[in-house]
Image 1 (cartoon, chains in turn red, brown):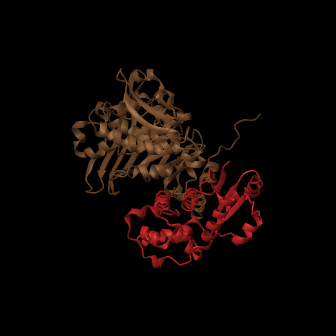
Image 2: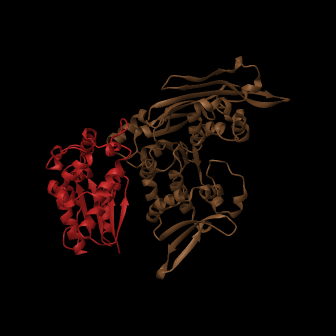
Image 3: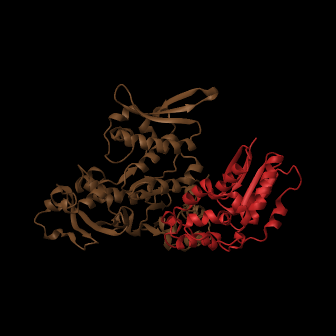
Length: 194
Length: 384
């Protein structure tokens, strides 16, 4: 039996994989990229019910949605045998990435002081990250920058994906983002119980 | 080097096209809207300049004549024109070329394609290499040849001609690759279709071939779980083959040649291979065919990674129907071309100029659902 992990996109998948690897969650898991938060929210009830038969983790980002804890409370099953875990990134996966301030700053070619100590405060993490790349002096990350009127550049998934896999340090990052810190604890709990 | 602008007049189903092209281009549109015809315009220029090519060959040998090329919506006997702007390795516009042609003959005399106008300018030194209007030329015979196809003339703009001649087109047909008899069929030069794909690989420098194989094997292993190794071998008859080793139950190993590969495996190998081979633009038709959805959604990233390997960044222009592919968030609106069917032919819209696309991407929404919805046919096909 494997755990189904529902995520919105490839970067969320890579970050969850990294967390599981880093914290020793050696379980069989299958990742499903949903192509959008709307789709996931629509099916949350279904996932929760399906979790009666096999474990599910659902991960979404907050964006402009209301408070994270309320959403989680609404949907998570309580109790030690909870098979369903909903984790919400505040506010987006980029905030989790940037929370490893030292390594992110190095990647983007800026001083770490440019990244807030609490990355949950960042209004628009994608835009923030892209702006740092623009300011920075690293040619290798210029493809993070959009060509024209888009949000992110053509190298976005590739460059950040590589960073998550090779450099990003969850132990550092969890000190600068509460939703990440809590998610790590809950994920560790989830796999030890199951 | 890349094609940064494409202009067409009366080309197949397009009365008028004038679009900017990036290093990745995703051409989207409903079936039969003319996506492949856009790629074909680029291939047309390539067919003119390559060995054994030329205007007549491109029009009559490889296509069905001027009347079939000319847009049906155009007024009778209108000229057809194709224009491109080419950027150099530093991404600065270097060449501007435009060809206008039509035909003569009919009735008792043979049909012949004729150049009406031809223009080539180097945008860096501003030198005009070709500025031709054939009403001034002495004979119709000379008008049947473009200047870019004539070796005696094109020496002066060698780099432009070389660029065009090395454009590749991949439309891998797995059945043809597997079929041993297709080995003897005539090939289409730079196009990868079937058996010629393996022949091209066989002709490569051994070291380069092995480097490519190693690189793509790693990528393939992630897509094909029990693949252990991929080699390129030649059998006793000198026929080239792929040989893959798969791990089986109980530690046994299974060797397969391309004859036993699935469609998906062949298309994936073809895709990964062709993306590494060469530095000039590559045209791809629906790369998503036969591939698993998770690979398809990573295709834009795979393309980004492979196009950036060389010192000269390589342009990839593809047509697609795939929701999964288009949902990749690294796609920029400038990389999208939307083909729309109108009552009088089709038109091409640049993604960056479409409000809904910009809107979606600004808010981090994947454009797959938008584009595939926008391009759905209006009427339901089946009415049971």
